[in-house]
Image (cartoon, rainbow, N blue to C red; front, side, top):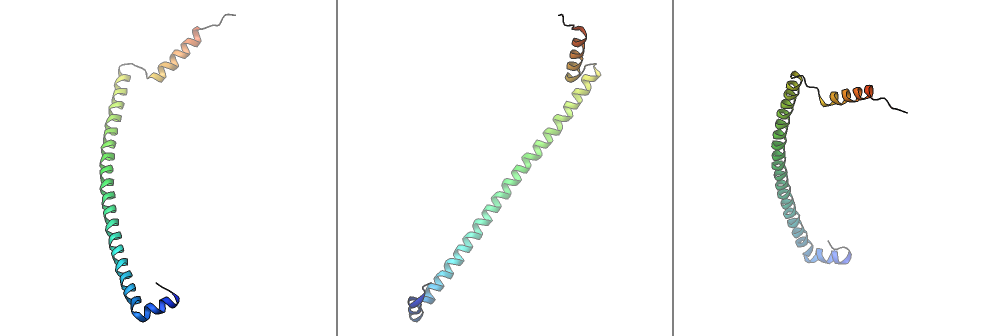
Amino acid sequence: MPKGLKGVWYSLTGKYQKLKADNNIQIETCRKRDREEQHTLITRLLKERQNLQRHFEDFKETYKTQMLELRQDIAHYKEMGGKLPEQEARDFTHSFEKTYEPTL
């Protein structure tokens, strides 16, 4: 909006009212565009979130299944008399220390 003498002149000639009306139309047009863009963005992000959530749920289910299978394999291995790798390594180190005598 013009200021000073130019503003007074616009007011007297009616240009001020026309300029003000044009500005208000532009403001409403921009607000409508912004609301539509925001709505589109929110919708897209919600769909993306739902898709990610489905993938995450599938991943969790696969993880649960694999962990259950792993626990069952470990239990079966123990039932067969096997030792877990950590125990085997400790037993090997312990037996090696017993039999190894350094010579000087």
